[in-house]
Amino acid sequence: MMNLLKRERDFFDSLFDEFSISPFLNKETMKTDIKETDRGYELAIELPGFDKKDVKVSMDNGYLLIEAERKSEKEDKKDARYIKRERYYGMMKRSFYVGDVNFADIKGNFTDGILKLEVPKEIKKVETKRYLELE
Image 1 (spheres, rainbow, N blue to C red):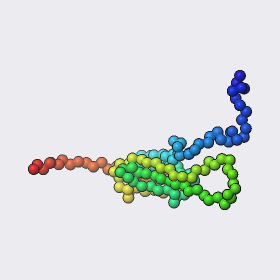
Image 2: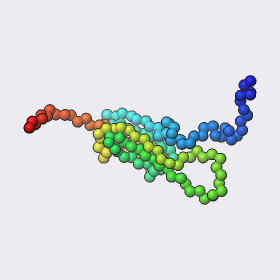
Image 3: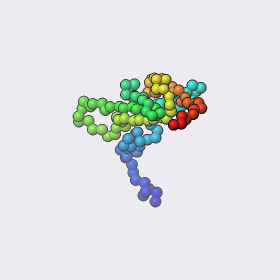
Image 4: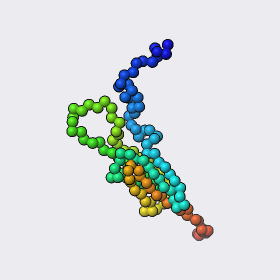
């Protein structure tokens, strides 16, 4: 009975077993390690296959935004017929809430496919006692 349910598989069936439309839909992308230090946080973000020029880091309303874009390489052979393409060309983004930090105090470098960022801790504003001026 088990043999009836199991069909014979050929080379191309196994080739497409793990095929997905976009690898960036996978939660495994941009794997990040975050380590807390006395002064702030150290982030190590995996971006294999990307060049330094393809990676951008920005800040918006307390969110640290990491963007990486890989553009498609032009093919010389127009008659090339791929059976499977696993290398993705496109853009991915990830953001982290870091609070009210000065963007100029964030330091970073990109080496061997790893983006390392040093983010200072948010400075909590201590409210001093203030009085409302009545009209």
